[in-house]
Length: 254
Image (cartoon, rainbow, N blue to C red; front, side, top):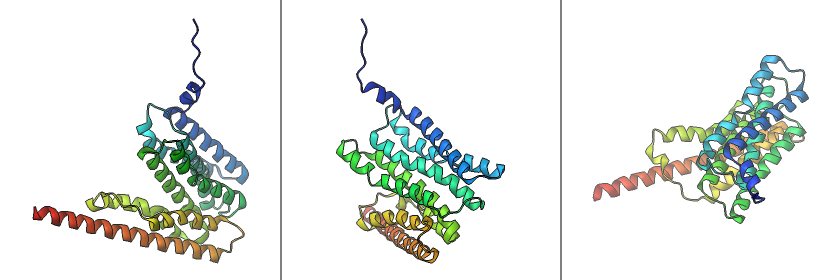
């Protein structure tokens, strides 16, 4: 007797973590090749470096999706991974821009950045509406945002100056500092200010790659975003240090 598998079985197989990661890397490489073709002629060493950088965001994806294995990747995760796919393509563009083989400001880049940022507004509502929201999805979303912002800050740096890199490196500096400061490992309370500042970073960096926006205006917007980010991180660090000090004082009284 032949047993017919339910229609939902195939999508689950296709959404296995390993399969999704392989498809993501292939997609990033395909996008990188497309950008290289658009930017031709490109020197062989620079093209090789760009191809090596393209799948780098997949390493972040692998780390954040590990708790899902060996199960399936959710639909919201797949939407989030589009930002990793875009980050791979933009990493290629950033390498070419740094090498002087591609302009850091163009409409194709601006459209790609805008599309990547748009997925950030869609994956969260999708996860909540379908009842699949959880800590793993939140972590995948957060790291996808961080990877994309880092790549965008490299692109912006080719337009407004190397100081724009501070936007992309800020979170990773915070993570590194938390290794030495236990207070920074405490859970942060929800902050609407932090959320708004975080969302503004991508939009500010987008202005750096839009050709229609004057360079001086874009630099001012990116500088404003960096200043707000410093304030946001500063507030969080102070709050965590105070909470840690209060916890130590309370523990010593017992």
